[in-house]
Image 1 (cartoon, chains in turn purple, cyan):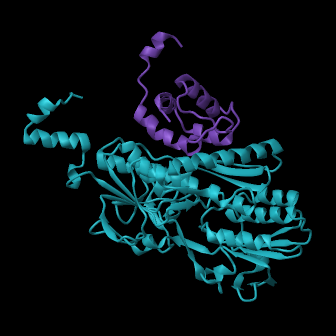
Image 2 (cartoon, rainbow over the protein chains, first blue to last red; image 1 turned 180 degrees about the vertical axis):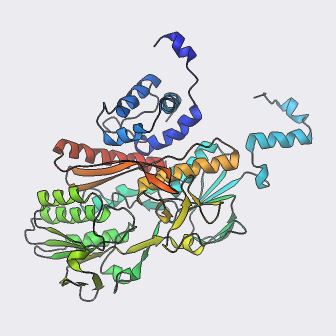
Image 3 (tube, each protein chain N blue to C red; image 1 turned 120 degrees about the vertical axis):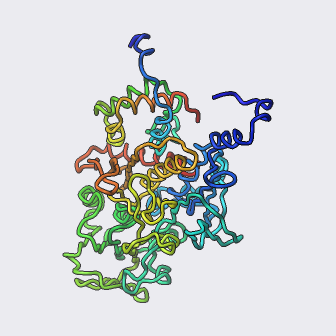
Length: 89
Length: 427
């Protein structure tokens, strides 16, 4: 992705991200270093978006995450990624 | 937003001050002060709503949680206590962090709701509290008479252990006292009930404990009023692999009807046979908590109809019902479901009280069940409003023949999920 495309992209909807993130926090709220459920707070937008899209495409294996990701559209994923990138524990 | 300094704030007119007050705090439509949310019940549904509304409204909504107990022992994972994998302390949580999120926690029993006055009366300290919005999350009550011969007193001999705490401890005490060759009979509940896979995970944990003690002749019979149960194929496959011949499940076609129990003799009577058991675990039929029923929120089923778009009671638009007390369509009665419903309710409540944005409701659920050490199965999926109910989208369920690695990973995931959800509920 080029810088020009980044500038042209619509701003992610942080409030939507906050609402959608509540579903994630059911499992991800207490992630420890050795947890099977990783911490997602403070991760980069690009990393979060890539991982969710990989679950949506079933390129990553966990059925819980595949199910959660299956109903997220690109706008939802951008909103979630933007929210978690700026969220604090 | 225009910056408001002390200097220009003091010269605002009365009219503009009123406008400012509305735009900043938006409580004007609800009279003096902040709008008030009262939540009855501090479990996975109630505590989640209270904490999310307080946290996300940053003090703009006055949130009070009424819960009699100072600590909450989770029903979810209590089967792992039965199996010896957890102690009760690890399943017990306090409300310190709920308070820290800005919730006023009142340890009292909510005794009645006056829907016309929009007030809740509570005991233990005594008082009346008014609300702009009310959340009811009292969980379940047991229908003692749904199994002839059973009663609250009989539960001291034949524990239900479907509400965690002393009942679960009694069940474990009785389980650990069994001798090889003893019989356990479980009377399973009819639908709908809390934790659909729970009775069958519990039977698995009974078998695990007996097997670990070296029992060769002990048996567990489940007499079930249902013709089928959650994750049945994978449970039964697991029972055959880990505990061959130990667990016998009888559907109504086999037992012909559950006639009743006799706590004095330890007998369970069905059309097929009378069993004299060393341990009888009766899980009766269930209904919404008393306060919800007394407030007229429950229908003939004993549970509370809700609007699938927002978890509002169909009876009263100022009241939300979340968790096991609600009729949540295709969603099971689980902590995961209650926590999910609570977030939809919290989002709607903030939108109504402080004009925050509302989004379409989305729900999800996953239930993990342990069959034997490191052999854990799961079922789950997404839910959304549809056809006038909360409707399931195609989900996932564990399959027979999965690798031991997948089942081990499921168990570890369930343990990590437990840490996550209790942090989400209680902070």
